[in-house]
Image (tube, rainbow, N blue to C red; front, side, top):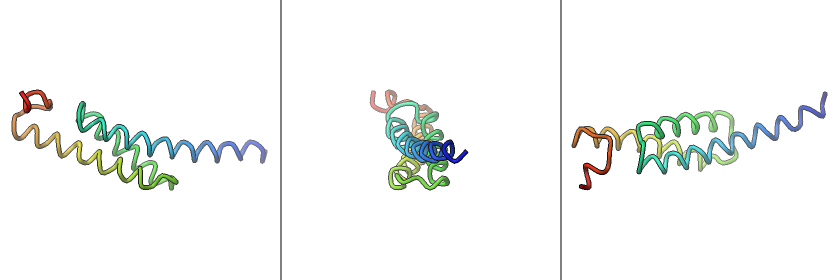
Length: 91
């Protein structure tokens, strides 16, 4: 029984590292496209990684910050132009 417990702990730790990295990447991409989808996903992944004590805490915090920034950007775009797209702001 003890032999099967060890890989689970390692896998769990790698999962939290993956969540932290994914939240950062999704939050960063969300600044450019699909911020109304990627922002909330980045927030959820970062929160889950932080709750599970990820060793990549700073990256999870960046993902959380970027996810919140995505939501704020969405609100600003909707307030200014009534759109969720950069193309109408730039063009």
